[in-house]
Length: 112
Length: 114
Image 1: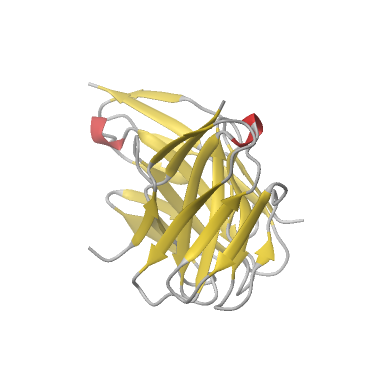
Image 2: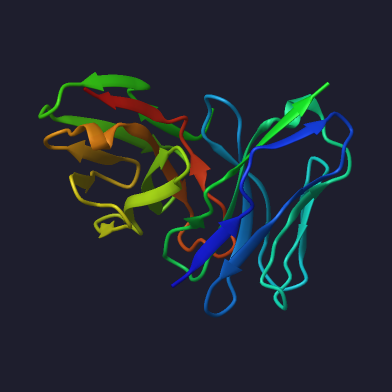
C-alpha cells in the first residue's frame, strides 16, 4: 500500500545551519507530495507541494524536489531560524478523492 | 477568518461517556476529514467524507462514528470513550480531489479520557 517514511527526530540545529529532513514514499501511479508544518499548540499548515516528477515546491525559504527515480521529497532550507522550530510532516496523495497519507513527523528544534 | 473551526478545544471525559466533536468549514470545500495525532504515530485517518452525503472509514475507525450534516459540517462521535482514545483530534477540509490541493486544518481538540 501507499506509505510515507520520514527521518526520525528530533533534529537539533543552531540558528543559520543547513536543514535537510528526508522523506521517501511508496505509491502506485504518480502521487502529489506535500510538506506540512505544525507549530506548538496549532494545527497543520501546508508548507509546500509538488504535483509531478521534477517539480520543486518552495515557500518561506524551504524547498523540496519531487524525485521519482529515488521516490523522495526531501525538505531543505539553507539557513534555519529559531522561528522554524516545529514538527514537519511529509504527505502524499495518490489519487483524487482519497485522503492524504502522512509520515510520522520530524521535530525540528533550532537554538540561537 | 475563513478556515476550519473545531469545538471544543479541550475536553476531559470519563471512561464510558459519550461526546461529539464538531467541525465546520466556510471555504465551500467538498471533502472533509478527521485525523487523530498521537506521539510517535503521526496523523492517522479516522473517517473522511469525499462529498456531502458520503462517509468512508479510514485507518482507525473503531470506536468512532461520523455525520456529514451538510456541506459545511462534519462531526465525530465517541459513543463510549476509552482511555485509548486520549489524543489530539484534527478536522481538515479540501477541494474535491487532493491531487493538486492541500488540506486546511482546524486547530485541534485535545481529548483526555480518564
